[in-house]
Length: 173
Image (tube, rainbow, N blue to C red; front, side, top):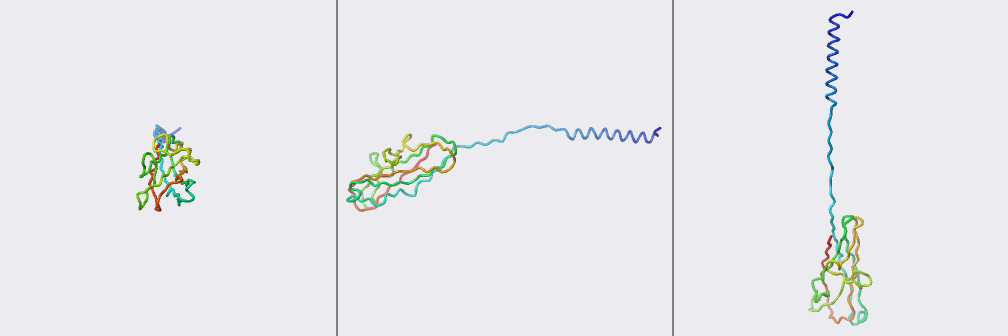
């Protein structure tokens, strides 16, 4: 036979265990929800133009009397991977006349005609309007080297001087 005192202790322990069981189940109750983590990647391009497209010496009475003077340089473009419809345009320069590119004499009022081309054969003039530039889609986000081919036509009767022009390159995307 269990004494009253022991029964009270056991009843008290049982009640404490029952209260503890409810407390433990309340502490382990939980609710959840979720959220999204978002980012977007925008199309972007940057351009590095060549230091110079340097034709070197043009000899109108000798080598270039019957031969064009050719040179080339690279433009570097970096666009976000997947950017399509990228087009690099070159303006006509600061010394344009009648749609032709010219280098102006530094000390004399003479000019030396030249042209910029999209191809090494120098058959397709590099333009300054949409559809007349170098077009591509960025297959990665690395630098793309785009060659610019230049030509000073033969037999231009110009004086001794230094000739120069400044061309602006624009990348549209």
